[in-house]
Length: 191
Image 1 (cartoon, helix red, strand yellow):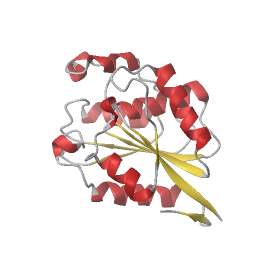
Image 2 (cartoon, rainbow, N blue to C red):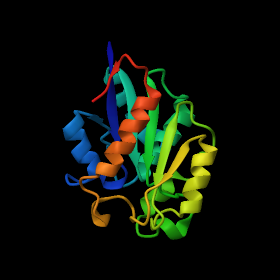
Image 3 (cartoon, rainbow, N blue to C red):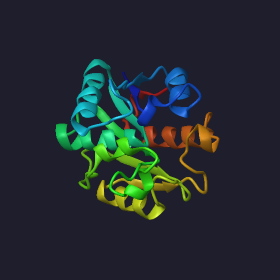
Image 4 (cartoon, rainbow, N blue to C red):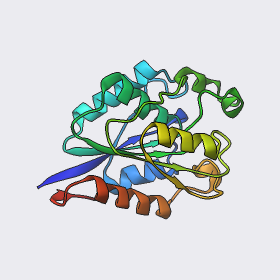
């Protein structure tokens, strides 16, 4: 039997200790991508770091991105063509780097524009809010369609981060578990 491991891919600021990504890292023993410059992303630098973490993490992998971390994953997929051990990606609250009005408080996001709009080389699930200040639900749906990903609305829940009340995120864990079950063969040991 083989196992599946999570790779946590944070956005700007590396998701703090109370963020659901940090809690999942601890709960599931996940690997984590730590960028040299978590405030000023570039597709090349952030993708190279993601590739390093993928290379260093054994087993089959499911990538879990939030906000700019979603853009990290889609840029990495475009630049590196994916990886044979990546079984899928959960893409939560994708930031719209192409719309200056959505990232005005965080100008570093502009470094991730333009957003790749090609199908991903692995299954993906986009989870977005109806009231995310950094992406409209219509744009998140367009991302999901372009990336050949499933789309789930999380409802009227902000940016799905600590500020919107998402430290522990049980609904997210349910969606993650369902996605992992769908993407991995029956002989895979899941968390």
